[in-house]
Picture 1 (cartoon, rainbow, N blue to C red):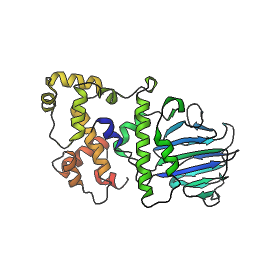
Picture 2: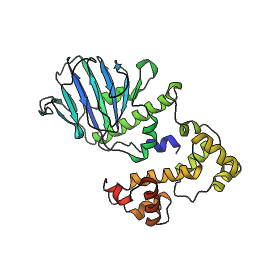
Picture 3: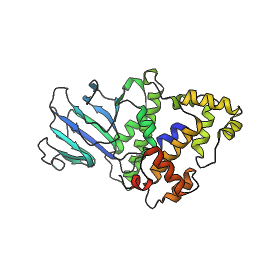
Picture 4: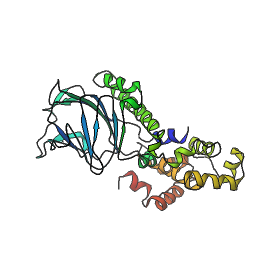
Length: 310
C-alpha cells in the first residue's frame, strides 16, 4: 500500500448519500450539511458553485467538483439566484423558512428536484462522516477543486450516473465503492497538475528512498519500526534517511509514523466492537495504556472520549 492508497482508505464511503438532482431555473441550494467531502458531477445544463470564501465557479456537462467541508456553500443556476432550498445535516431539505421539502421534491429512486425534465441534471456524492485517516489528505485539498471535462477522461462518471437510479440488491454498497473509485481518480488527477501544489508526502512517494520508507510504514504500521531498521531496508545510513525524509515529508520518520498510527487508531476506535486494547495492537502500541497516553498527548483527548464523539 502506498501513502496515497492508505490515506484514501480513510474517506471510505459507508452508506454515502448519493442523489441525482434534476432542476429547472430558477433554483438555488444552500448546503449546510457540514459534510467533510462532497462530489458534484454535471450531466447537463450548468450550475454555479459559490463557496463561503473564494470565487464562484461555473460547472458545465462533464465537469466535476469536489467541495471540502464543513463550511456552507451555494449551488445555483446563476450566482445571483437567492437560496430557495437549504440542505441540512442528514440530508434534510427545507425552505429557508424551515418548511420540509424532501417528499415534495421526490422524483424517484435517488432522484430529486423541481421538474422530471429539468434543464439541469447533476449528481452528488456526499461522505457524511469524518474519516480520521483522511485528515492529512483532506487538508491537502482546496476548499473547491474543479476538473473540466476536457482535462480528464474517466468512465466512472458515466457508470455512476447510470447506476445511481437502479434499485437492485446490494446497490448502496456498489454505489459506495463507485464513489470511492471516482474520488481516488479525481485526487490522483488533481495532484498531477502543477497548480495543485501537491502535498509533500505525495511528492515524496516518487523518491526511491523516502517513497520506499513511506510504503513500509503504511503497509505494516504495527511493526516496531526505528530509523535504523528503515535505513537498513532502504539501503542508506540512518542520518541520510532521517535528513532526506524530513526534507521531503516535512517531519522526521518516527513523527510521521506516530501520526499515521494515531490516525489509524482514531478510525478503528469508531468501528463496532473495537476496544482500546485491540486497536492498540493493530497500530503498534504494546498496551491500551500506551495508546491512550500517545492519543492524549497528540490529540488532547483520551481514546474513549474520541470514540464517544466528545
